[in-house]
Amino acid sequence: MLHLVRHGEAEGNRERRFIGQQDVVLSELGHRQAALVADRLARSGVVRVVSSDLARARATAQPLAEALGVTIELDAGLREVDNGLWSGLLATEIEAGWPAMWAEYRAGADVARPEGERWADVAARARVVVERLLDDGEPTAVFTHGGPLLCLAAWASGIAVAGNVFTGPIAPAANGAITTILPGPRLAAYNDTGHLGAAMQDDGRLPFLE
Image 1 (cartoon, rainbow, N blue to C red):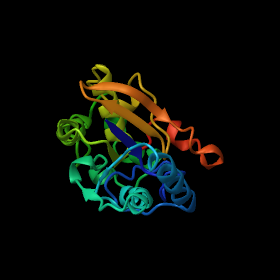
Image 2 (image 1 turned 180 degrees about the horizontal axis):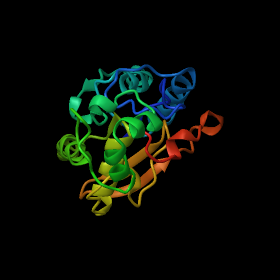
Image 3 (image 1 turned 90 degrees about the vertical axis):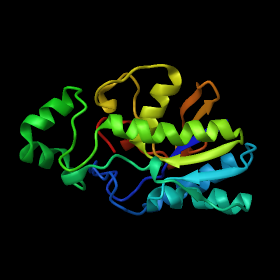
Image 4 (image 1 turned 90 degrees about the horizontal axis):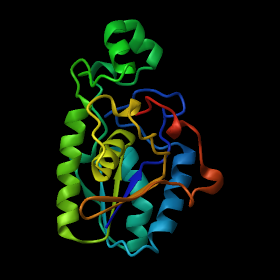
């Protein structure tokens, strides 16, 4: 069983910036969300913690790793999409610089960001990591990002998303939400925020947020 966690709120999330692989840190709210995730998953039977190597995912994983007394295993395959020249920009800035490409993206196409990745690239590398962890058979907490989570949730539920995952049939997971995947794969739970309470925020449910 894998419990996939979207990192806590990071600097730039509220502004809805295309953060991608920029190594930004958690906000104050993000750290509170990380503590609540740890409290929830420390009682779930998890024995292993694996994380994207980006700072916001590592910081979200750290409280759980400390509670369990384990070392975080880092895997770059769990990183957010490489936004290339779109990194750190707002949607309005991307639209101004690449109007035709942005229109395709909003319409649902899996465009290759200038000097960056497609969603198909993200899905392929994240799936390699998760398939390996499922084969290992250990209850594991996996800390990743909004884009890879959408790709993995679609894969585990048998939904084919050929284009922009943020315009697909699955809404984005909130910061600090837990998604559970069983061997098969089978999607057992998605976007579980019951542990967050007042530490919720709305940005994770909006489209085009990475």
